[in-house]
Length: 254
Image (cartoon, rainbow, N blue to C red; front, side, top):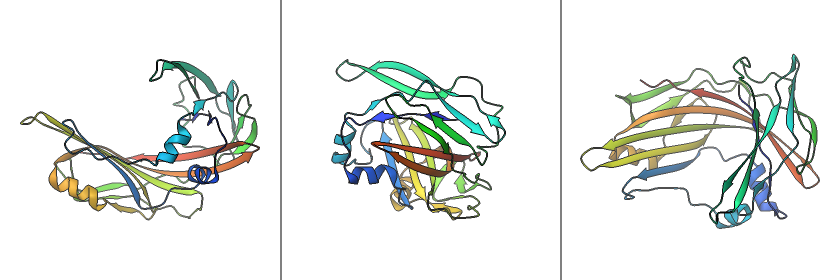
């Protein structure tokens, strides 16, 4: 089990379109594809909306208190403690990186987040939110990767899992795939990163753009994982809080 927290200030009033984009669930059966070649001959990446980039240009991390508290039916978990570091931006300006994380070994926290768990944000620059119920999420199970040849992804590779026992209008499922190869003859590296929002029906096949790449290139799989996400959103004044519960499954690759 892991848990993290982060809070940001956009520096301006956000319009309704952008608010909808960050609070709405992703569209199922859509993928973001990144394909990078070291000689830059075949790079593919997602083109971002320029209006979104302008909104996020002035985003900065902010504090929400010294620690976030988590309370389960069996008692409290370790607090998520404030960590603040600085780094230099493109113009050598100091920028604060603020996050919240466990400060201890959390290996004893196994089995996922129990039902009836609450999180409290004490507040600072970001306001307080008390006893927010963490949404329940069904754990992933029964996964397999079909049609992989000698570790290589193929155009007809399929990813399977056990679908959720019940549907939810605040849940979405994601698949992440990474693959990498190096060609000695041309001293060229090829790397594929695929991130898809999928229907939780137990089966996924690559989109046509990825099938075309896998027809042209031999790409051994580095990692494949699937995650089921449940999210709750709350708004108080000019602050919005999103709480995610994420169950992830990593596929074993030969």
